[in-house]
Image (tube, rainbow, N blue to C red; front, top):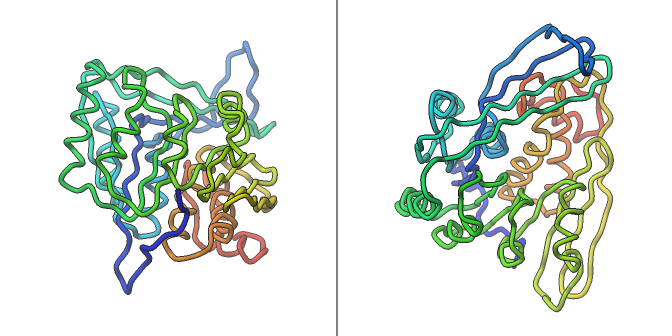
Length: 318
């Protein structure tokens, strides 16, 4: 396990990145002046977009002008909308079409409290698990060499538990990043270069694997990037028997519009800055600025480059 990245930008050539985001969503974002539980609530605005951790991460990498492919499972009208959105964002959709209907994610944002509530539909592909794995592998076999691979989000119900491991076996990449925490095996954790999850997710994994952030007899380098909303993020890098640990402050901003997808922006931006040759710590710090900038946009996982640059420099965005 190594966090070194040998592939960097050369001239105008951008990196080839595969995002494995098997469970996309068609997102509805509703904004309320005040949201009252158990009452009739009328939204003041409504926005639709393609979303899910994979889509959000792919959008960010495409924004940085990488050659981005998104491996996903789609179905029905919502699935077609997601594929169409990929085209609009310059993302190459490598998708398996199934009988099930791609889920809808409803995000309710209360302006009074600036808290968000997500209501997420289930998604059942509707075909056997082994068939899903074999078909996904066949989709990537003709283009299985990438500069980076990102596993983003949990696989849909009905997939094999080791589907991510099987997919990684079919892919060659210098950098592999895991941004998921459900149904994750210890073997998969040891195979990827970087684990980027939030504080709640790492606590879930530590209950399953108490030695997650310990050497546990494995001298290879490990890197864990742990976000915690607007609170400081945590950088944990292990080389041999020594940990480098640091708190990464999150810039304070006003006029937050939509924090949904900010963690996915961090993932995508970290991959970008790593592929540019930055150290893991520097890449994470800049990625945190990108994630913070995205909170200023009403659309999930989108941000202005100037806002990110200002936050990196310690200036006010805008």
